Amino acid sequence: MEENEKLEELTEVQDAEANEEVVEEQPEKTSKLKVLKEKIKETDQKNSSVWQAVKYFLCAASAGLIQFVTFTILSTVFDKTGVTASMGKMWFFGEMDKSLFMATTIALGLSVLWNFTLNRKFTFKAANNVPLAMGLAFLFYVPFYPFQTWYVGTVTGAIRDAIGQPDATWPSIIAEGTVMLINGILEFCWQKFVVFRMPKGKDVIPGEENDIDSEEDKAE
Image (tube, one colour):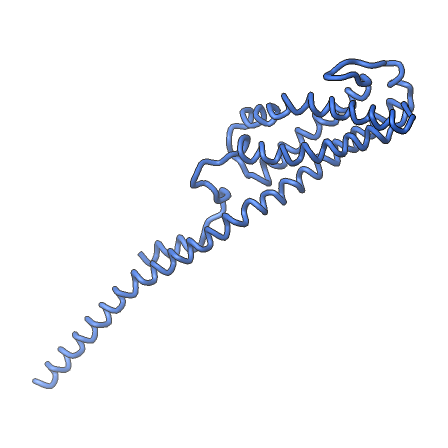
């Protein structure tokens, strides 16, 4: 009997010690999970801006292609069909052909709509108010549109004067291409920090969850 009692007491002591070890391991495991989570979060934050910029410029490249092709087709058709000569010139922050103004405006409008739609859905995955976001996107062009039209007209005219070919088409294409590069850089900053700006603590893309959170909850 005494031996059985001692055996039972020994078993109880061992079970108690085992339970204490489990309790001690729980906070340690939770702490390790938190550290791992923080490391992953830091890595994600470092890479998110780079990856976001890559996705933006891929979308912007497709929008730029639409703008460039549209502008090239319209300006070439206007020049070849005599529309440019018949429409004459206008003043818009500098003298420029009316046909050049039309080609620039139409191409830019199509590009902005395409770029806004793609970046909202794929780059920034924004769920904010669409009319407000669209308004902010177009607000960027309040100062930039006059600059772009002035730039295209001025650079086109300067190149044509330099080469002595007032009817050449390719100078306007060069002017359009270079201003698109300027536009891409400035518009990325505008969309990231103004149009699709996310509140602090919302850096993670909606819909993406960290599996460590569930493991941590189980551990607790």
